[in-house]
Each structure stands twice: as C-alpha cells, then as structure tokens.
Image (cartoon, rainbow, N blue to C red):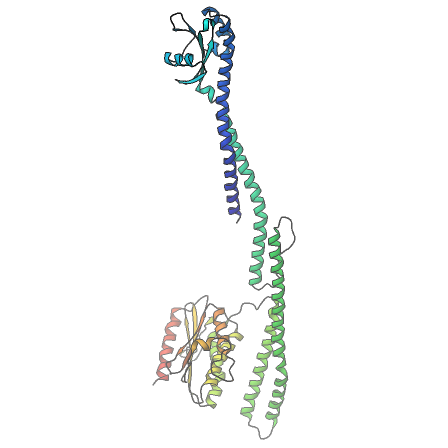
Length: 471
C-alpha cells in the first residue's frame, strides 16, 4: 500500500509538473528569440538618425562602428546609388533580391541566412530614396540562456516530485502503520488471543481506520463475551451431571454391599461410574481452562489408546455376543508398538468411543466389528468397520446434528471424530466395509511417521486380521 501511494504521488506530481514546465520551457525559448530581435531592432533604430542626416559612406561607417552589433560585424548599411543599385557598408549576408524586396515593400522583414536570421529595415533618405539597414541575429543569440533555464526548470520538477514523494511517504507510513496494526491484532484474535485490541488513539491515524479499530474492538469484546458464555454453559451443564452421578455411585455402592449381588457385574458398574465421573471432570476442567488461551499442544500413543478402548468395549461386546477383531495395535509377541499422534489422549479417547458407540447403538446384538490401526510415514489411520446395515447417506451422517441412526441420536459422534481428525490436518471418511456394513476411517496426520520396519510388521498384522475375519 505504501509503495502504491508513492507511485500515485510520483505520477500525479509528474503530470502537474509537466503541465506547467512544458509551456514555461516554450515561453523561455520564445522570450530568448524575442530578446535577440529586440536587440537587432535597437541597432537598426540607432542607425536610422545617421542615415537621415548623411549618406556619406565614411560617416556611416563610423556610425556603424559605434553600435554594438556593428562593432561585432553583425550590422550593415545598404545605400541607394544613382544607377538604382545599393552600395553596402559592412558585411552583408543577404541576397540582392531580398534587399530589393525589403526596399520595395518599405516594411521591416526577417529573412533566413546561414547560421541565423537577418533583420532588414528600410530607412528613407534624401531625394525619396530608400536605404536598408541589415542586422544579423545569430542562432546562438536566439537560444542564449534557454538551456540553462530548461535545466533549472527540470531540476525544479525533480525537487517537486521528491518533495511530494516524501510527503506521501510520511502520510502513507501512518496509514500503513495503522493498517498493519489492525491486521496484526486480527491475526492475534484469530489465533485465540481474546485480549487483543487495536489502539484507537494516536496522531495521524485516518478517521476511517480509527472507526474500523473501534468496530473491531467492539466485535472482539462481543466475541469474548460469547466465548465466555459458551464456556460457562458447557461447564455448568457438565457440572449438573454430578447430581445423577452421585446417586448412581451410591446405588452402585449399595449394589456391591448387597448379599445377593454378583460381585463381577457390580465391579463393572462401579468402574463405569468412576470413568464417567472422570470424563465429566475432564469436560469441566477443559471448558474452564480454555479461557487462558486454549489448551496446550498435546500428544498420545494411538496404539495404546486403541488397545485400551477396544478392551473397554470388548466387555460389552461379549455380553451382546458380538465377535470383534483388533489389528495393528499389537505386535506378534503381544506388545503394542508406538504410534504417536498430535492429539490429546482424552480427545482421541472421545473420538474412538464415539465411533465404537455408534456400532453398539446402530447395529443389533451379535453384529461383529473390527478395529484396525495403520501407521504410515506422516499419518496414522484408525478404521472402525462393522457387519451391520451400513450408512445409507454418508454425507447426511457427517452433517453435525443430523443424526446417524434415527431416533435417540444427536449426530455429534461423527462430528467429534471429524474435528479430532481435522485438528491434525487429517480427515474422516465414511464408506462400505469388507464386513458388509459401515467403515469409518479416521486419518490423523503426524509430524514424523514411523519407520519402514514398522510398516512391514503392520502389513503382516493386516493379513492376519483378514485371515481371522474371513476364514
């Protein structure tokens, strides 16, 4: 913007300077020419009285020498002779025909001559005869001082353009500084700094930018209020779950102490309640802590998270008679290999629970599912496939709040997983699985992918899983 304003200033000032300096240059040239001919007219006028008094050649020669042009050899006098011819006193640069024409017309004339121009002025002498005074005007006299004047005018034009550039640069610097400050503050606000504000005071700031700064600050205040209200609402809603959780914990404790209660189911219910309480506490803390500028960058091991969540849901799968398979989260000796991803563990857990929860919610009992983890250079892909009816409209299922399986579904499960994937630059895709049902593929981008040896091991795992799934 600053450069553009300087260019506009140069263009405008140059056009204005040319509009004035070109006519001034022409006037200077014309003035120099007129000054040279005025001098010639003065010389001719000085010789007129001498011709009116005498026509003696010797006297006229002395009179001619007293003039400046005559002394420089630039003037001559042509006297009429008895035979009608003209006698010339001094150097002449015109032809007889030009002299005859001037004498006949009786009016001053300017004719061209080698090296300049000649002024011919007829003068009446005795016996009604006409003498002609000739004054030579060199071309150098007609352009004397013109080049210097043009150089001065050109320098003046350069000075004017330089001054306009300096003024435009000073004015533009203030505007650009204010604009850059507004842009920098907008970037800070976009990066999560809700305290970013644009200064609305200062000298030299255009009123329009000051109004824009005031409007931006008003918008930032409103955004902060809305975000704060949203955080408080999320925290309050999560906190309201503590009451039914407390009742559920008491009932679970009573169930564990009852004499006829089965210890195994009671322990499972107790563990589920404790986990639910931990998740609610995590939601509350996360909603409160985001006011400090957002959560810090975190990472976790996708292999460990996948193995943990599949183990958690496998208990319910066994109760419902669902066959399940896990591939890619265990080595041949049963130890899990590392697959780090730039996602907080709680967020990845929430995404996997949403995907696995959809399988249990939208497919009947006895329908199997499979979870596959594949780590490649630059990305980790987690695939959840089932043998259910599939998803008829994947685009509609991916739309937030649309619901993936009819009544009782908020439709936020896939959106939670999608947001986790897009936070790393990855994606969430919905398709048809080899089991015949839906296949949800969660692709997480990583900054550094695993080595080639791990890729070969995971290929063997996938082959073993397919052989076990489709004997």
